[in-house]
Length: 82
Image (tube, rainbow, N blue to C red):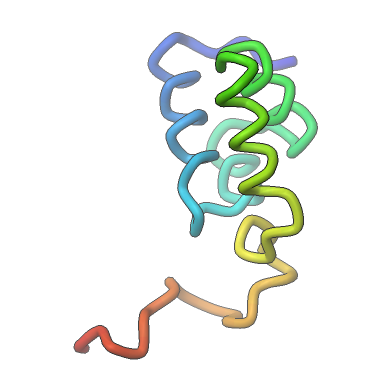
């Protein structure tokens, strides 16, 4: 596994919790595969928080770039202006 600073670990955890941030984005920025992100989350979260995160991200299409319904750019809510 890649050595990360405390600040980088904190940022990976933050990105992993975000619904719209893909595992692919984490791979590009930090070089971590989805399995390595899961391992990092398991090591740095409490057991209850880890289970909640896994339940939240399992099967979520927005966490995987190829499964998204929108192809390019950022997600935008239909109610959002601009």
